[in-house]
Length: 368
Image (cartoon, rainbow, N blue to C red; front, top):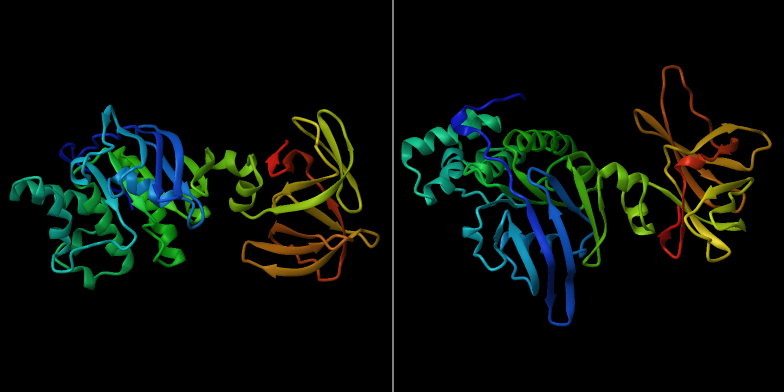
């Protein structure tokens, strides 16, 4: 859905956000360890991590709904660490939408403007423009109970940005929707964000959602930043085993070391040796090797060491569960082309290890 809006509804642009030494403790428990993050103006940054990783607590401190135990929060050049939520000029979209059930769509979206003293006629024009942006112009007179989940989420988004905040915070806003609707709204939210130029800080536990929407992703674990960077960089070059396993599907397997030098390691991959570059000498007799399922290639070979354990058809690709002679399980994803046929269960294979796509880990940290 394409849309445009007049100069009256033009974007005001986003503000940078800076968190310095921000932390949160509850008694003896540390929910968020001191962290430093700079979010650029107009950037879409996602906090991604499992439950209990500290991502929502960090967002709530930024919103003003949690009081930091230490550190500072800046929006633009203004410190807002102890400023009440209503005075931070930040938009917020919650997981449960938080719409007023007794108000129409138009009234819900116009509520923040009414609270800011915007007159009825000007408010109506602004609300109409915002409903056009989110594709709900024909639903202005309906009540939340008369809307689908996706439509309610659009109303919540419109209400959060109708007053043109420079920063928009979103806490798992699509988690209650089905997969198709989630995918559609991911695209819509990103489009609207780009049109308005607003800075977005987004919380999700859904790795695909974070990869699809974000300019950068901040992966969190146990209240700390595990790694922060662009989606492709995190996927291709995870700095530790946690990020490697959490972001996307992966083959992360223990393998014995055959030989090690200052900048290479030779690994027994089960039926063949592979030499990989490293940044330092491997400290031990065993490492973990990462190879993504889409990079693992194979071909039938009656004398091959590996075997197809199972095959699953997934529309545009097939998933092959493969076992090595020592029982190590691997996953390969192969795109389906016209006329291609599946390799059957029990077929013996030779594997093609893509050296340029593999990474080596020792003691949990990447060495390549």
